[in-house]
Image 1 (cartoon, rainbow over the protein chains, first blue to last red):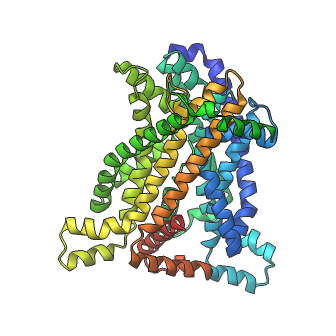
Image 2: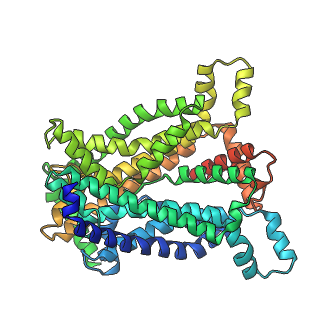
Amino acid sequence: MNWVIANWSMIWELTLTHVQLSLPPIILGFLISLPLGWLAHRYRWSRGVLLTVSGILYAIPSLPLFVLMPSLIGTKILDPANVVIALTIYAVALLVRTIADALDAVDAGVRQSAQAVGFSTGQRFWRVEFPLAGPLMLAGIRVVSASTISLLSVGALIGVTNLGYLFTDGYNRQFPIEILTGIVGTVVIAIVFDVLLVLLGRLLMPWTRMSSKGAIRRRRAATEARELATTGGGVA
Amino acid sequence: MINFLAAFAWIFDPEHWEGPGGIPVRVLQHLGVTGLTVLIACLIAIPLGLLIGHTGKGRELAVVITGSLRALPTLGLLSLLALITLGWGFSSTSLVPAITALVVLAVPPVLAGAYGGVEAIDRQTVDAARAVGMNEWQILGKVEIPLALPLMIGGVRSAVLQTIATATVVAFLTNGPGLGRYILDGLPVRDYAQMLAGSIIIIVLALLLEGLFSLLQRAVVPRGVQATHARVDETRSRGAGDRSTSPDPELAAAETKMQTAAHRIE
């Protein structure tokens, strides 16, 4: 405990860096996956192509991908951008499938009603399909958020500073308290992000609180099954 | 491009194919560590998962355990467990610290695959098996395991991929084995060709295993279930509204789960 107090400013700084580096992959990942997920949902051929590619990308281990980045995008080996872009790739790989599934799950009757009352394709997407697919999309983003925050620490191995530094440094100094501090810090960030995402979801999708009990149960079961499928954590 | 040429030159240099630090030895170490880890994880998690799935008991606990283990940062868990096992008196050249950490990370996906696979089976199917006079062991062996096999293999597949990835990170431990050595030995001396070469080999290895598992997963689907998947596919291509029209939420949930299973098999 004394060590934590004595080194508080360093820990806090690492925490802030960790948060700063975790945000872009989550946000960019969602923005990139949305059109791709729609494309995968819309046409059979694009579904096959996109889901196969994202499956392959997700199977690539993280540390080798971090090392690959400089040659692919021309960065320096110690550039944090390598890690941020690699994590964005994982986020996209995971979210394309989730978003396609979420859009698939929108009731066909609702879709047709929207068309019947004269919504254009764009209106139908933004005002009907997108909000209705929201809860399932949110479940996917929560998985991405947790895995991004935890994977970022692997970047410490190739010299990208974040809370993962406490793991490598703690191991080299044979000092478990330091490692434990890093683990607690990472988990706390993940929990805070998760709570914020849930709150954001309630704010933007107030109807999720009013659904019938059966619908909630069904949705929860679906989310659980999906999460099981995305456990696919090839990465680490 | 120049980097990639240098990396391939490094890979095909005969000098790197010999001795204790050569590519064949490192590949075998990597696969050996992965295989041993997944084997231990299966021995622990599959019986436990089947028990949970069959009896329905301990499910909440399993969800909590698998969920929270997944949230833990791999590198942190690895370094902490390595220090703890060192404290138990294992030398740093022993594989015990690395394997212990890897097993802890590999158990959750195998467990989730096993209990999820059994749970996704329609209760009516199980009740029907009981009604025709099968005992609990027969139900488990002849109904539940075959039907759960695709999802179970899915869990093992996740565990293998995760272990291959984490086995890379294990090289950061003192004397850590495997292909990650090339990355972590190359970094301090700025030998980027070696780092890239190691990365390429690991990626190829991971993709090969991923491909192998997707074939395996397809092969183990019982014939009767293949028909169900074809129907699910058809439903999906029609617009997939049916998911929410099922009168019984439990049934809908099971359907969703089976669809998820079907997805993974695609």
